[in-house]
Length: 276
Image 1 (spheres, rainbow, N blue to C red):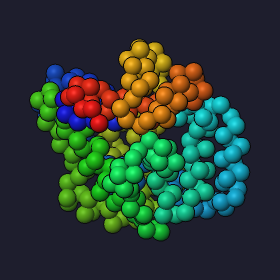
Image 2 (cartoon, rainbow, N blue to C red):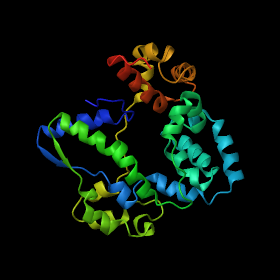
Image 3 (cartoon, rainbow, N blue to C red):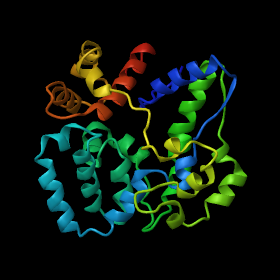
């Protein structure tokens, strides 16, 4: 359905959700753009807070957490996220956001990718104090979220509408100060205030959750045999991929977010007989 390699594993639950929705309706509303417009991503707060921590203190904390297994193996654990946050705090402001969102760190990209690919995909340095919502609207939305939802919905003949991306809504909301949208650890404050009384409180106040997929356990279980065929002698990534695969398979580290897009690229290349 995707036609080309697509490394976001959330494409799978998105398709299942669209299939289930299509059994009841032909048109549905989705929340794409809500996090960008109303400041809903945790990384926005992390980016701002990271700039207030001395680099030496951040580096020391990162090293200390790196010695703990959970900080290396469980990407959704508090320790892993804390280590990633402290790593971002050691970076210049222009590079900090990339550390919070990247799947492949620059050091690993240099090992996995050719110089030509590195040059083609190199992200521009962000200004010292960028509006990260606009960065995501310009990149993450059109490059990942919107194609993912559009392809999944069209595959099952479901029409999606994104009211938060209506031009009138964005022109109204984007100029509003971030301090009115995020208060402490509470995000999307003005959206929640507007919805209060229209949407049940337990929905408004519950913890944010994404479309999580247990890729790490799949690669060690149901997909292990297939993954081994591709990761042992990969088309992409060279000698570093078997090493990542071995560490993941043995439980020494959780490389699921790195290995999944490589596996998808391998499967795509195999299907369409792409040799290089």
